[in-house]
Length: 102
Image (cartoon, rainbow, N blue to C red; front, side):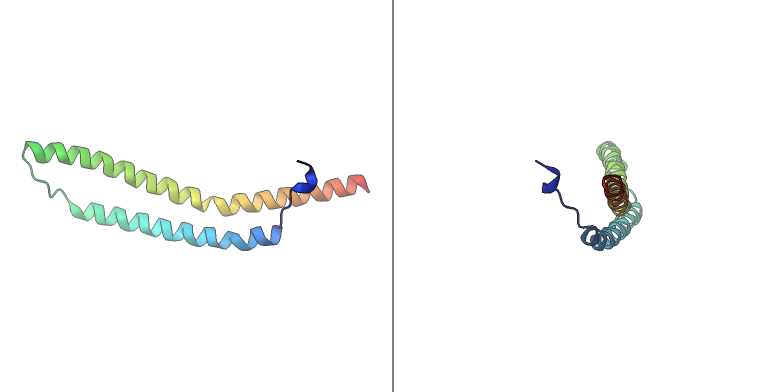
């Protein structure tokens, strides 16, 4: 593959970035709503031996799900700034190469 095979349309990339911001915000809101709902459940499984076993497993899995949702929201939120950095770096490199070659 030659360098001519690769094209970056900075306007298209930049126009897509707000979508990532919007979806990251929606994901963050959904994760926060899930956390609030889960916290509001309390411990409805009872205080007998089976209830305690279920509760321990449920709590551990609930923590993993909440942490995963947080990481996912942070990851989606990081896409727009990463795209901007990629576009800026590519344009700066292209400009520097063009000046060097002219």
